Length: 97
Image 1 (spheres, rainbow, N blue to C red):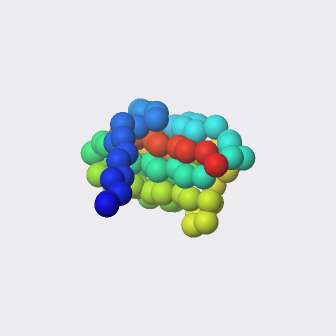
Image 2: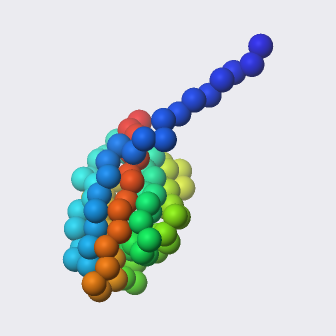
């Protein structure tokens, strides 16, 4: 007897980001997982708990950055930005514990 695992690849939230830092996910003390997937063609940069800067956590086009309750925990507000004059789209998945 086997176990079948399934998941939805549909994002919880889709955000278009530009060259001005903006909030992409509210603070959540019960956050167990958060995945930020860059569906665009430009680099995105993340800021944890404060405005994102282009020196922040880079998320390349087609790339992702994940937070879990055990590795890279992040329960604060999450921000994102692109380089000057650029924009991209982020797919965001969040689950709570």
